[in-house]
Length: 118
Image 1 (cartoon, helix red, strand yellow):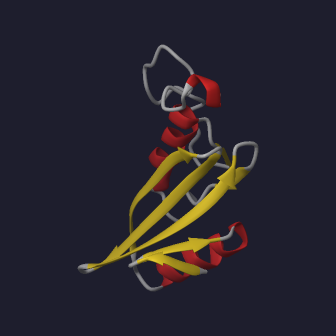
Image 2: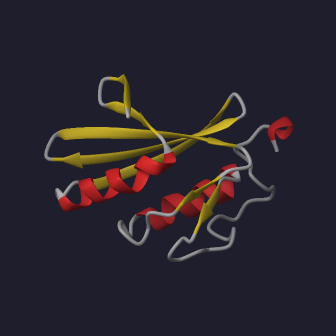
């Protein structure tokens, strides 16, 4: 784990579940999961808060890679993970409730990716 900015830590996939479980066990709440596509990779940022303290954990994922769902630990992740899949095309595996790209009524596949990145 590497701190890249104040309260933003870059993590590897093998660190994801240890971080998630540590936050859950310490009673931190999941605030949001944010996805963006930068320079051919997905940046997935998981944000947790307790009181007025916030910590963000960023996972860099290749376009063809997948990330495991955290929805079995944090149920509120279900909507974020379905959204990342539908709007960005990120492969999120084993979402507890999978909407199968029917969360939004949209006319095009992965509208938040540029056409050349699809």
